[in-house]
Amino acid sequence: MNKSKQYETVFILTPVLSEEQTKEAVEFYRKALKEQGGKITNEEHWGLRKLAYPIQKKSTGFYHVLQFEAPSTAITELDITFRRDERILRYLTVSLDKHAIAYLEKRKLKFGKKEGEHKKSKAETTTI
Image 1: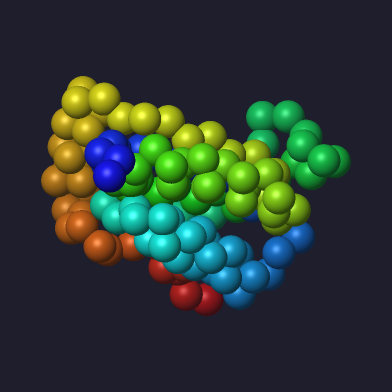
Image 2: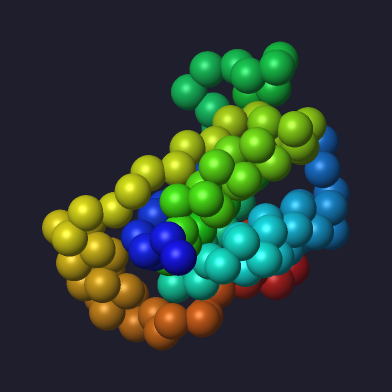
């Protein structure tokens, strides 16, 4: 059995998706990770943000961050899935070292976030 390591993935969804389609896409990747033996430790939805440069003629995208533990085989499968999905503009998965893990734990404590809670963007928490 492969030993699990800690990873962080940031992916950008195309801005033409509705809020419901964005949630479905994020849920799809949550399930894909769990099916590959991964365990999500933290998740953040940063919402619609401006891109540093246009990607596929788009200047904005929905940013989402997943921090998780998974075997290396899960990362390979996740990479293939991201490449095939036309909803994804860009993605980046990095392995977290002990210093990054310590930083993330401090950050969780600073913002009062417990494992399993999902951070909501300003757009989701603001009522009109």
